[in-house]
Image (tube, rainbow, N blue to C red; front, top):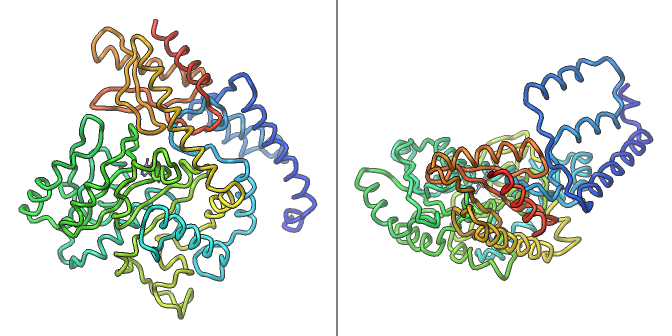
Length: 467
Ligand SMILES: Cc1ncc(COP(=O)(O)O)c(C=O)c1O
């Protein structure tokens, strides 16, 4: 069995079939008529199906298996995929995924992933330069924005000089609109709920920088040790970019760590047109950027970058004689010395290959197209009687709702119904969000194949459902 399972002939045959299947799936997804994005199956039904499948004593036919997996999954390659912020990966990355899985190099220590560890350094140095960080800035690639935010905050804490016996007084300041992973990271670090100081946002959902000083003074007077302020580039719900330059000034004045959560919107760094949203990021101490959101890379791969200016303290210096005996805590090429992960795939291969094969131009086009499309969609919504935007979009996230004429509760009911119906029909996959207590429909334009016609079709479909 184990020898058969390792046969290169069987592998070659099955791999060719899978590549054909993926290519056909892509062709179908890009075909002229809009293809279904989701065939929603209730969780219990899905569970029953796979329980039965798993119990089966029939020999598994791989083609049949792929067919079941694909047909019961969401299709992010459909132009109607307008849902959560996961990338619509470039086909090239199906190949890098196969190579990553097959090679199974792990960045833990240099020898286990000589190429992966080195590529991480090359990519991080390049990105650091683009963000305007100091020349010898450092970082690594980790598994996701949540883990990235946690690692950055950990470094912020260790750099703060605050004695661990005072950790009960630790506090951070963050916009009320920040992604929940920031709050979760802070609580993992031992920051109490009342010391996660939420700063209100303005009508555009940007952090109220005019309130930072007052809120900080209040926190300090209450005995809190504010060690970090977090800026959003951009927020998750509506895609608002905080005024990073103003936050940087504030952080510098008080000597506190400034971290930027650029998981989604940090990608604007590739765009001449939208780069200005990141003005001030060069003064931050750390940032995260998810490759698996706006950089056409499959989940999960995130850059965490530390500005050289502040890299004095190393958050980690684990003792593990079985992994490394020499090289010191800071050696760049042993990833586990810097990350929360020990075993970690060489996920950087995706972004590296994309930039090497297509150049950064592909990201410039991607950002410009999707951010522009966000604006076009917003214009379509504004031109539609009985619909309104939550806010003018800055990026490719647009929140809007239909107006029922029956008050706010009536609006909520109408939009919830429309959302459920769209999901049930499955041509489009959009999501929802709650803004200032109200239910909104939300699209994130992640698919570069989505065009204005697709969005017109979506709006027509929605309008049809309002009556
Ligand atoms: C702004 C922001 N930060 C962090 C995250 C978490 O990233 P991940 O899902 O990669 O852990 C998200 C996810 O949507 C996000 O939008």
